[in-house]
Image 1 (tube, rainbow, N blue to C red):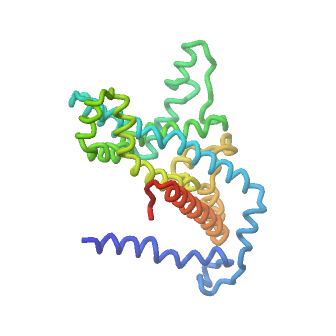
Image 2 (image 1 turned 90 degrees about the horizontal axis):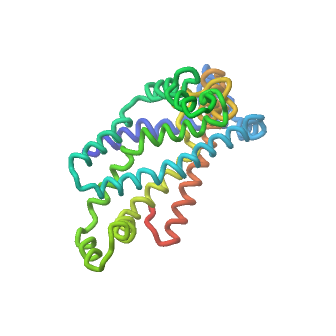
Image 3 (image 1 turned 45 degrees about the vertical axis):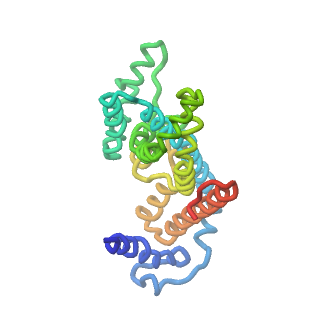
Length: 285
């Protein structure tokens, strides 16, 4: 039964690694990968020396850290809150409402964001005007891009991301809660001393995985929210690779930029995993 899964990863993830070598070549389609000339680190040097390098790194890492700092703990808090609900109907309703946004496509989500944040008749700006404020052009002012991107992502993913924590909470021995209750612990104390330690290994593993993808800010949503006015804050490595590689047909250069971001993610993954292992917590290996 595991053969199809192994075949998928081999065919679509490992075999394409053969093409990574074009990052070190001047790739010409008519000559193919093997026939193209080796140029070593030429494309990497060009990227490091380019005007866009620091802007891309600042935006990519900034969005990744912002998303990690705010987006990572919220599903944990939501799972702890849902776990404490005893009324089954209300619990299922909350779960359904928070899970539902996950199934929206990125195009639909960005369309909703544009409608809700419209300066003319968007719901958010109408509320701002109702309280005496001035409308804000959320989608064109660079300073708002990261906040809109991160908070819309939290709204969409927090319910779905909380599922794994709810599963971990369901595996905690009820006798621990009974013992804590007998010892006089209230609900908050039981959450702090029983529930959180019980799901801590899961938290550490997911934190390691999330940290290892800080530089891999998703392309689709950023690209759909991006425009000429907010490009200063929205231009990230993935959109730059698209512009230079697909639109500009600079395949070797784009491959070098993409490989650079992958190596950074790999280093972060190794580092965070080693730190977690040293402090005696769970680790990936």
